Image (tube, rainbow, N blue to C red; front, side, top):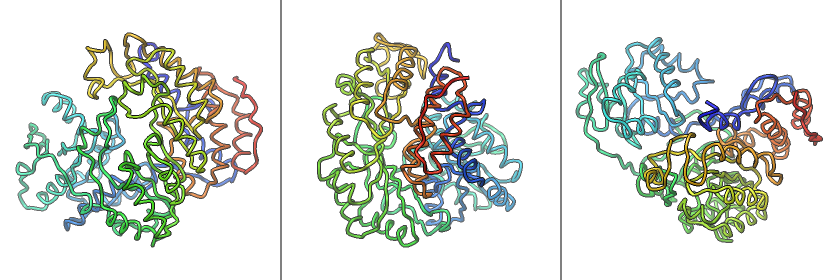
Length: 517
C-alpha cells in the first residue's frame, strides 16, 4: 500500500531492519541480550500484569463469581489450554490492544477447539467502536466473522460481563434481561438488548491485587487512579466515550499502594490520561507517597504545560522516573487548532523543569494535522531539537472521521481517511516525508517508535533491573538501525551487532555511522 497510504511508511517507522528481516524492538532486545549472555531472553512489555484483565477478574470475584486470568496469550498459552481443559462456562476476551479482527478470530478458534461448550464473550474498545460506528446489518456481518457468542457494547462493560456470567450459571440463561449486549445462540440471528451505559464507582471497584499471585505482580504493576480525561483535544474521542473525569479517592489509592508495597512491588505505571490533573489532587497524591515512604519508581502520562514548580518538585521527590508527554506540535497555531490548551512556551518551560528534576521525558508529535503546512511542521522539528526530550516519536496524522476534527472534514476540506488523506495545506505523502526527514535530522533526542517501544517498555525493562544508561546506549543503536531502514535497505548487521553487544555489556560503544549493504 505504499503508493496509496502512509500506512506502509508508518510500519517502516515502527520496525527496523536487522539480520535480513524486519523486526520490532522487543525482538532486537531479546536477540542482543541472548547474544551477550548466552541465555534465553523473553522480555516483553506485554508480560506486565494486564490492567484491564486484572480489573475484570477482581470485579467478578467481588461478586462471588469464579474467574481466572490469562495475562498474555503469546507467553501464557499453556495456562490458557489448562483452563480450557476444565470446560469453563465462559471465556471473556478484552480487546484493549486489538485494532483489527484477526487476533480475536485466532483466539475464538483456539477456544472452540479446546472447549467447544464454553460461551465466548468479547468486549472492550474494539467491540465498542464496531457497534458504535456501523449499522446493525454491517455489525452482524463483522461480529459473525469474529465468531464469538456474546458481545458487550459499553465503554466500561464490567457490570454487563458480571450479569452475563450470573445468567450463565442458571439452568436456563436469559440474556435478554442483560443490557448492552449483542448475542446469538446456536448460530441463529443476532439479538440486541437496550443500551444502559455503565458508570461504575472507582472506589468500590479498584483492583483487589490480592486476587493474583505475587510472582505476576513483581516487580512492576500498571494501575490507574482516574477514568477519562479533563481535556478535549480535537484528534481524540476518548473523553466522549469515557464520560466526565472520574477520580478514585486518595484513601482508596493509599490502600492499594499499601498492599503493593507490602508484597515488594517497586515500579508503578500509571495509565491515567492526565495523571497530574487536577493539580491539587496530584500534589496530595505525591505527598502521600512521600509520607508513606513507599519508594516506588513511577511513570505516567503528564501534562507538563499545566504543571507548576511545586508539581515538578513533588513528582521527583515521590519517585517519578519518567513521563509520557503528548505535546503533538511545536507550532502555536497548530496547538490551537488541536485544542490542546497549551502553549509552546509552557512546553518549553516544562521540558526544562523535567530535565532539571532528572525525570526521563518521552514526547510524541503529529505531523500533518488539518491546517499543517511545511512551515509549521518545520517549526515542530526545530522545537524538538531545541527542547531535547530524552526520547521522542513522530507520527504522520491519522484521519479518523469519528473524532472532533474528523466530524468537520467537509468544512475543513479533508478528503480520504486513515493514513490516506489530503487537506488544503498538506497530504499524507508530504507528512510522511517530513516524518522521515525529522528522524534523519533531529540530533538532540533519541527516537522511540510509539507502536513498538514506548515509555512503558522502558519502565518495564527498568523494573527488570536494566540500568537506564545501558538501555539508552541500546536505544541509540536501535534508532540508527531504524533510520537506516526507512528507505527499505538493509543496514550492515555486523556493525550493529558489535554496538548492541557493547551496549548490554555496559561499555560505551562508538556509534559509527552504519553502512547499508
